[in-house]
Length: 481
Image (spheres, one colour):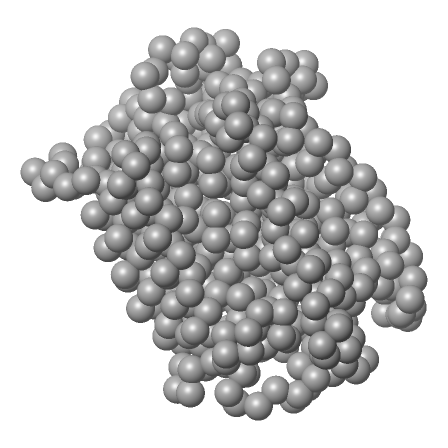
């Protein structure tokens, strides 16, 4: 494998993250408590009710199949560009450029979108304590804190995220155990995993909500250049992330349905003015108000953990695009002391501040507009990148056969997941208005942003090929020691 050299001015901090740190970084991006409190009730209401737990199981299995080819590729392509690097080495530099810009769009959209929900949730929390400030004030405070952490060395962010994620898991697991112990509303039932429940209502929308809840797990490979023994660390962190997130979501969704009563679940959700209060109502009913108060605080910290994790992810994509000359090289440098992608981090901070400020000035809703619109764009973008990555795995190993990897890992499973992701992309595009609440022109324009980003990235890669063919050929190559 050909590698490219990088001096200290554009080298990320090596050997700074182990399996546990990377796992918690990506689980933080998936924001477990946010998904359980926010996405799961909405997915049940708009999707397939109690069958949502079974849908989580199906999506978890599909992502495990995707992970097989994904981690096989990670053992050969150790580059912080992740999806971009895989596309560049597997399909070609033009595809790499397209994916690089889709990644920058997607992770920016996710991070900035979650900033809206974070601002709204924090505003509501502090209003209950007598501190009544607009949502955007809290969003800007979060942007400032994330800016400081993103500018510094990555292991500091990892330590903070580990504490926050563990706290999230603990409060939800306490609720899970109390529902399990009492038997729920009318006894434990396996009905949420039955095919009739899974296919009831709108299963396609349920699948899309489940995928959205996992967004972030795929970021393990972004930290390849900062991992200890990346050929071992990255595969383990990827599998651990999918399994931990998937089991947690599936079991919690099952117990939420059992707690409300399988037959009473949808009427209970329909009766709520805000379905995202459903989990907190279950907590009051089964565990008491003390846990509910703790959960309310940790819901805010879960959102903060998510925006910090996505900030780190998008900063690395911007940094790599600069380092490899798709974007100006002045972006592709690291801090002399922290070895963080500090310039890219500042760019992401500025973008977040501009977009949040724009939504605030226009008086748009932080949840129904900023959060819903942007996170659905991000979900579409990430699934497009997963489809491209699956195809890239097949093409890479056809061009570079490896005795370490079997045909099942490098051809059959990646090809199957590519087909599955193409179907899911189609479902997202045709259901985008229903999912995001964006109608009319926005219902078309927002998903089209992914295509626009791809075209811009392709043009940037084509321009690089014209002015520096050697740099173009090196797109996505691993760095040498």
